[in-house]
Each structure stands twice: as structure tokens, then as C-alpha cells.
Image 1 (tube, one colour):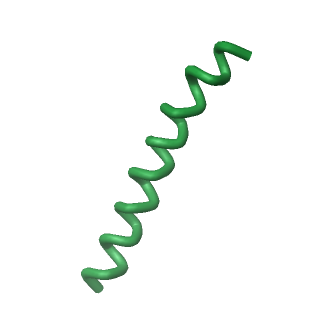
Image 2 (cartoon, rainbow, N blue to C red):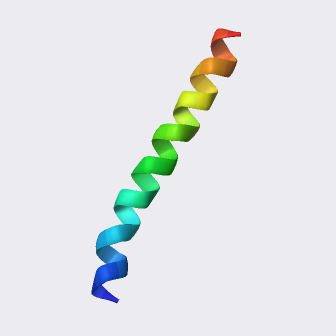
Length: 29
């Protein structure tokens, strides 16, 4: 369980970065 708690924040940050990038492109269009 410790490994998951350490990896999860990293995965969420990566997904969040991709999502904000998509929203940024959409708002530019």
C-alpha cells in the first residue's frame, strides 16, 4: 500500500498536466 500512496500523487500530477494542456489548447482555439 505504501508504494501506491507514493506513486498515486505522481500519476495524478501527470494526468492533471495533460488535462490542463488540453484545456489550454481548447481555450486558445
